[in-house]
Length: 260
Image 1 (cartoon, rainbow, N blue to C red):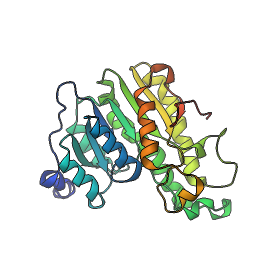
Image 2: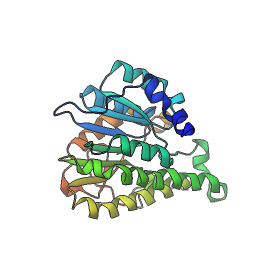
Image 3: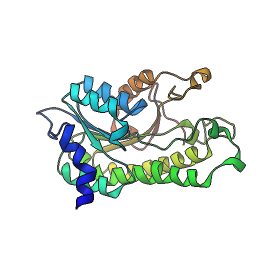
């Protein structure tokens, strides 16, 4: 019991604690919200006056997110390591019966930039194992935890950030990103399988590629787009989702289907 108090005490000390949406206010829960794409999603949803449950693996590394939440009362910051069962169960109880209109799985373990270009001999087994633990199993756990909340929504959506590197049809034809690509391909498979369940629950589940986004120093040289452009375009795709897109892998730019 002492351990649990130590873990979750920061919620009580300085974070917004009003978990309830106002009447007619939509709710999005975003994982990996402390930086880059996740943080941009938080800002754009908050600007649209959504109630945003912004989760982060570590509160200590979320200064900008916490500051933003203090300035925007519709943003709630929660600690969530998606591989941590205690975190998941705590939030499951805290938000029991609360509708979540969009569950946005952004949290991921990404390889170091230079290591992405190593051939098969340079693939690290431990990093590969962690990629699957976070990107595949962790994402599945988040869905298991909150799918009942999404079903409470009248038009629930589960959005999972993927990558074209996981596509057999459109991936770059060079030997790179082994661990990340494999784990995201497995996540895509989970999305497709899940879609047969969500069709019966009036929930739309998709995977989406954010494009090549300039989140790492040097990627701008590869024609990467800015974070705000990627997120702005994904917001349009997410807003326009209909049940006929359930179970598909979509592109950020125009919502076209990407081959698995």
